Length: 236
Image (cartoon, rainbow, N blue to C red; front, side, top):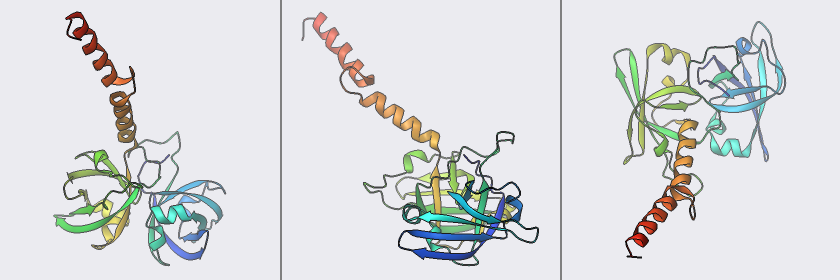
């Protein structure tokens, strides 16, 4: 589990692709490797990845992760190049303050940056989701103004949602622009999107309650009550 508060910017130092996936090495990562162990989880641009090896030094430090084809297809990590910066966050500890929102680092889809608009020292960004498909249903039901979204692993507040255009917006204050990669991305770039998991559970629970079969669920209960009333009145 993660918080969406980016700890450090690492640098992609090597990429090794093969038919089964990709090995990625992230350098300049010393600040997050002090308590690292092989098998630990680190969110890289919002994708939870397992550390397969690491080398911690005061001068730099690096770690290696393996990306399966599913991860490459679901995220923008397959587009990364050597020297690209990436957002890094270690799995949260039970003893730390919880400043973001519950982030699983299980990327739902990618979105495209369609506009960048300065607003004083802040920056307004607008993103567009891809058309929904049977394999990837629309994420718009989980996006609400002032709700949470994780973009490239960073916990951000939604400033607006346009369902018809499949677009949503966020604002980055100057401090955030300096601490994450998002403010440096150009129009047309893709970002990893993870919606608030609480919304997923709420939607599933409501749909299950409304759509239960037989006497299960709200619909079945209403139908049973109506039938009993009609019988009492001699209509049914």
